[in-house]
Amino acid sequence: MAGSAIRGSRVGAGPMGEAERGEAAPRFRVSYWCADGHESRPSFAVEADVPEFWDCPKCGLPASRDKENPPAAPKIEPYKTHLAYVKERRNDTDGADILGEALEALKAKKR
Image 1 (spheres, rainbow, N blue to C red):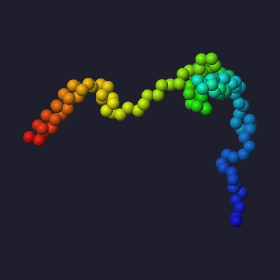
Image 2 (image 1 turned 135 degrees about the vertical axis):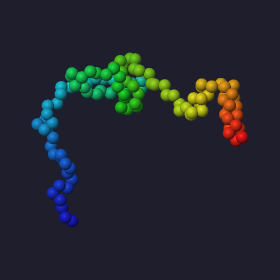
Image 3 (image 1 turned 45 degrees about the horizontal axis):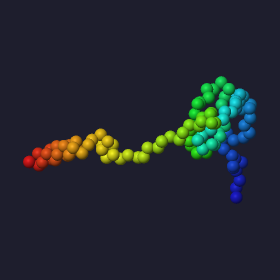
Image 4 (image 1 turned 60 degrees about the vertical axis):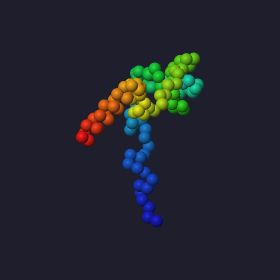
């Protein structure tokens, strides 16, 4: 088996240190809690604006910095079909009128 000098490495591979990447920004951690009681602690740069809400990496629920009052889980609306949206906008008499008009238009085309 012929060997290769670059086997197992990739472009840019090698020790990465502060000299190559530059100085890391000073950071701090903020605790967020979700409705399931999970705590996540993302880190932010000192000069960054800290968001009010953060998505929990464990369950995906929204989390806030208030441990006693975490945000409620969002209400998930079920998928609606096109027919369901039409039924919200129209009542049965409107539907019958529209159907009658469409049938009359089809009959007029056949003549």
